[in-house]
Image 1 (tube, one colour):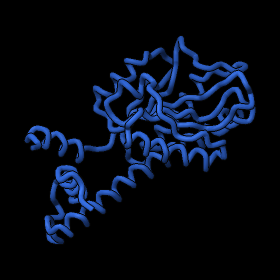
Image 2: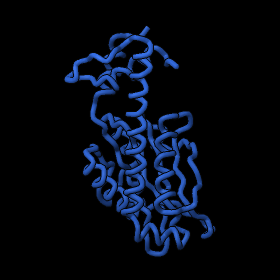
Image 3: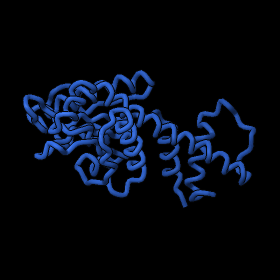
Image 4: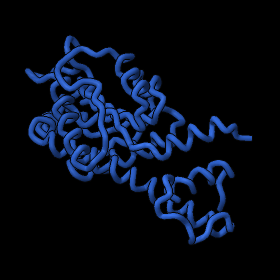
Length: 236
């Protein structure tokens, strides 16, 4: 049986505004990968700031773990996201390897996180499509910021700084990386809205709700349907 307190918390979570944490990897005394005179921390921040502007323009709330070149340790990054109760956590990085032929994009989620995996896949698809980078796929990992955040979290390895062609993209197309990540996030959120619509249809077939409802209801029927479906354990 679901406790009233648990049900209330779930309702509040569903109806709240989406808040996304953007985490530009490294920073301050931690440069991340360094290739020639380029530092990963700077490339990460450039993409992250552009991503923030795109999401804000689409009325999606954003919180940054850093918005300038400063040292923020891994636990602090998790704390910022957890304490602000963000809905999704996006960590942005660049890859590097001793073999300069290594190239492409890969996106990580925490093992067993279905929502994280879905979000990662949407973002991965958009970067590969828009930047034409090699598709290294969606992977699972126990990276600190994936393990110690309580919300679905992904870590994006945008491209390889150690690969000349990838580095050129990172230096000259950060706006496209940001747009691709934003597109992935938005398509993921739209998929959730589609699921809510499908949930309504399932409840109507069961006779739990009908076409008559108050359009000014504080909780939308899409949101309420998703809650009921989860309570019932899912219906086919």
